[in-house]
Length: 201
Figure 1 (cartoon, rainbow, N blue to C red):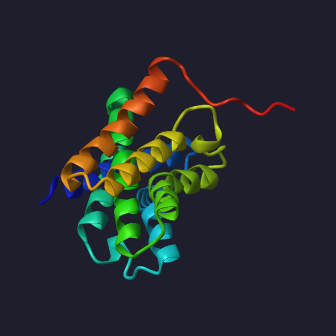
Figure 2 (tube, rainbow, N blue to C red):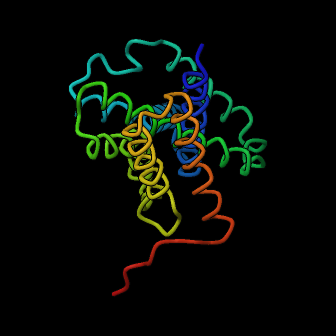
């Protein structure tokens, strides 16, 4: 099992937990919670693969994703109160998750000869669209439309990946630097309360 694949599964687990927590806060039933957790975890990657015409989509060809998502939903239902006390840990894994999902989206797009600029967009879609769908289903304003730096970190990491890739930097090193860039970018923005300007009427 590669490190990227392992981190992908961890990110999927955290996204599933995130979706299930949102559903629980809205008092949805078990099916509603599972569906929300499921779509949060695989929504971005599925949308990316559909746009790229890459079939079957990732979770269709790998049962591990279904197992991980189901585990996330079950753990959330059984240990919701405990999980809620681990917000910092979940935030860290969520940040790692968007870094990994961005990287996977870009690499998959480039492997299909997609233009590098569009590959960055596909990386962004992979990382954030599951959360957008989650928030929309739960009748919340999607996180990427609020003040917190989220999508911008993914774009910054994507640009770095394309630049290093064009310089023919070692693939493993490029992957590490890209994910690290996204993680550090988001953590620093949270630490120093940096945010994008808000459009005021």
